[in-house]
Image (tube, rainbow over all chains, first blue to last red; front, side, top):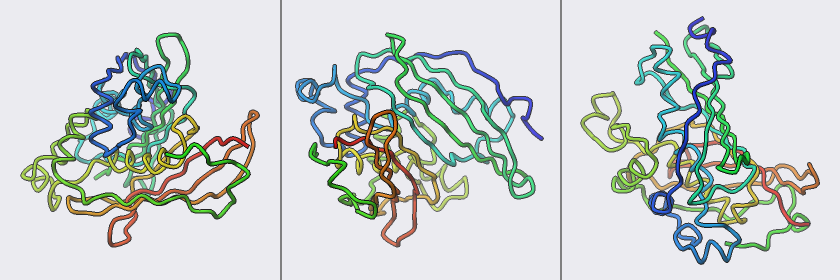
Length: 147
Length: 141
């Protein structure tokens, strides 16, 4: 099966600096109005070091380093035949503006469904902050239409 | 945002306050492309979207999921979130009105925390499910 040799593959670590402006842009784009995502004083009053990254922002951390594309490119799959099937997050600690996040992406499974018509690529990414604290885990499922 | 939701005050089967979004605008898709780092042209370029066989630009799946996340952070402080996942089951288009809903499916305890599990949906105005998801939230007793 295409790609089975890639199961278990770990990619080079990547880093992402969480900027205040980026969190504000992201919050604005998703229609968020809570001041903790815009105003440092409001964030501190709520107990955060600085503006917190919204719940799905960790995916953007992986996207900025093009991580989701790496397995697709490596398999030689046409990007237009691939879809983001599922996404999940597990949260361990806050991600805030000013953090420098290190990510480590790994292919954990590749399998077929529907008699090979669909190929699923399951990718996990662990995020740690500049203090070595494990902040979040992501799991992404990419679905590729074969044939 | 409410910081007052308590474990003892919620029951399996309870719905959390729903979130009805304004109609999706192309401007929002452009803003999210820049903010999220997802520059796939099918979200902002009508010609390329049609060239790829779509009826027009579509919303980013991760924009829909981000909005579903707001359902949760409107209900409890973000710091209460332990897990959040979703399956992308349909596309959303400009003009669509998305409604996010959540219902408590389980109450449990792990690692000394009181946890509630939720089933989540984001639907368009026709009732098509764009996202089907789950979340786990830690609540004070």
